[in-house]
Length: 293
Image (cartoon, rainbow, N blue to C red; front, side, top):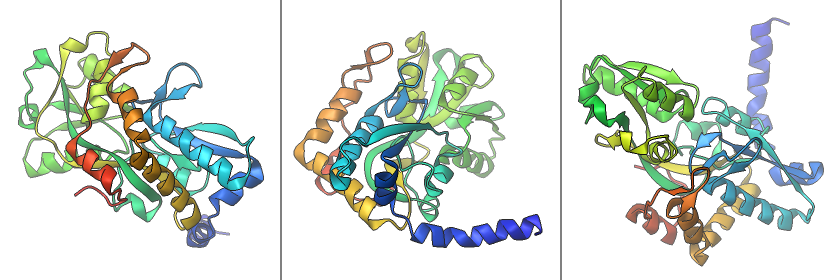
C-alpha cells in the first residue's frame, strides 16, 4: 500500500481510538500507571538524580495515582515513569503511551484538539531571563539579537509573532529543553531566554551565581498549567478533576504549594519564596479547566 495512503488510513483511525479511551481499564489490566515527567521544569517536574523525578506536579500525579489504586482496587499498582519533552509530551499522551502528565504544560485550545486537560493548577506569565550585565530590560532591547526559547512551547510561537509585529528581527534560537535554553544564555550564545516566569525562576534558583541574572520585561502572555490526559475518557477525567478539586478544598494543595514554592527545595536547598498569586488563590475556590484569558 502507498505510504501516504497508509498514513492517511491510520490518521482516520485516530478518532475511533480516542473515542474508546479507557485509561482506568488499561491501568487495571497492566497493573501499572505511566506518569510523564520533565527533566528541568523546576519546581513542577525535574530530576533529583538519575531516574528520580520530583516536584510539585510529580507529587500531584502521585496523589492521583493513589486515587487510581482505590478506584481500580489495584493496591499494588506500580508507577512507571516516562521522560517527555516539550515536543513529544502531547503526542505521547494522545496515543496512550503516557497515562498522565503533570508538569508545566499550558492548557490551550490548540492542544485541546489532541488531549484533555484537568482543572488548572498554576498560572504563569511568559517573560525574559537575562544577565544583569547585558543591559536588557524589555523585549525591544533585544532587537536584532539572539533570544533562546524551548522548542514545542507556546512561547516559541509567541516570540516569532511579536518579532514580526514589532519589527524586532529577533534571532529566535530553539532549545531542546529549559536547561538547554539556560545554557544558551549562560554561555552568551543568546542574550535572553524567553519562557514562563516560574520556570525562569527555577532555573535561576539553581544557577551557579543566581545574582548574575534577572527576570525582566512585561508578560508576553498568561499561561494556565494543567495535567494532560487522553481525550474522550470521562471516567478518568472525573477522577483526576475530583482528586485535584478535593486537594484544593481540603487545604492539601496549599500545603503542597508551600513545600515547593515557599520552602528550600532540591538540589541546592534554596527557596523560590513565591507566595501564591491572587489568581490561583481565587481559582482554588472554583476550579476550572478553561484556558487562561
